Length: 336
Image (cartoon, rainbow, N blue to C red; front, side, top):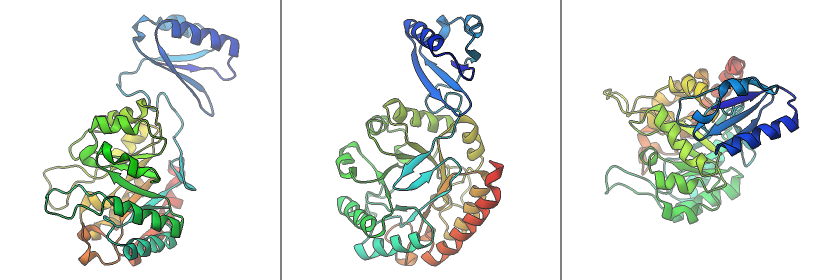
């Protein structure tokens, strides 16, 4: 249940109201927006008399909600969440480009790509240190050494870094990582999500291969319920019957999520299509659909990449694409 208060509500009346609600064994989440204050009630709201609440001078309206996710729900939090990471703003009208290789391979590789994508306008460096692979014989990443190389690239370029975690036991290694990524295969690893809920840093949560939008939001709720509300959602394609692309990029998820949640929405066109030539059109389509940013795989030598070279674009291609993305975003941002 949510209670929308009138503007400039009397503080004494508000205090009486919250005391009464607390006495009903309800948890209260108060969100003060730019235009209104909202009280989100969590618990057995069947004990609350809606007509009684609506009759109070300070109450504008009362609504019951059916969605099981509360903290991620836009009804509880009308204003967009904005997350600041090392000078980069994610959400709230800004457009964020995260770029870098699928996997960290060497000091020269990651530092070179980091400088290239920064020069082209990326504000976050992505790179895989731990790589979940379908085959146990495929390259699994440099692991802890990969994180050290990412931190070295961060020191040289000033770019904040994002990399994927696979297990709770790896958390100590992520102490200096700016954004922790939860991959599609771990979207419903609830013990990991609960542990990340206790971290004071942004979490990029990727949608599972066959997960519904509601399931994605419930996974976000796991993190937020633990106290960490710095959650970024990522659509990276879902599994359908289509085989022409690696996955099917669900761009319709952007407006649906925009309506349902206040959390920032990032699109991953690289994993969604698995084809480098598809990255440009899908990136531009995501911008037009209202995404808050993109996470793009960039490699200086895709044919010889140790992981997912077929979906990686070159630094030169990224430079051109980045300019097109920024131009398109400038043209369409007023629509959202």
